[in-house]
Image 1 (spheres, helix red, strand yellow):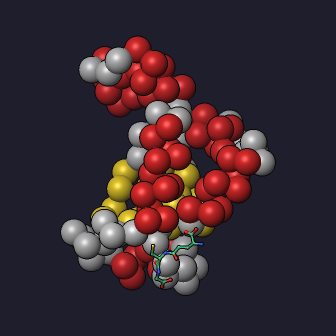
Image 2 (cartoon, rainbow, N blue to C red):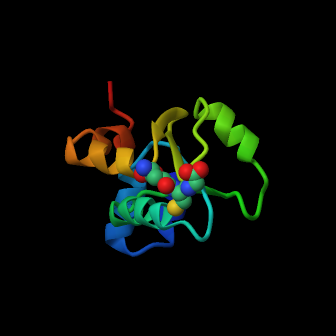
Length: 108
Ligand SMILES: N[C@@H](CCC(=O)N[C@@H](CS)C(=O)NCC(=O)O)C(=O)O
């Protein structure tokens, strides 16, 4: 429902992506982080909406470390609550053809 509502205000190709992408994506970032920029760019290139937790704005570092089993670098990315890893991991998933099914919420 949220996706449909957001799609209403977007141009057609972005609107389709909002409907197509069902997964909940969360990304912990810092504004100065190049890896975060690259990870967000990949998600944006797919039209994937994500929730960004900017650790410079909200101090949720301990939450991030706990959820990512000790991962302290940014970004830390979660898709449907599953820890994906950082920017390199996200790109590796994409290269392996595994990211799109995850974004559609149909990954096994
Ligand atoms: N391989 C990681 C590298 C991430 C990385 O090095 N991030 C930097 C900021 S751009 C960082 O958090 N450095 C501090 C640390 O490693 O504790 C990825 O692809 O996400």
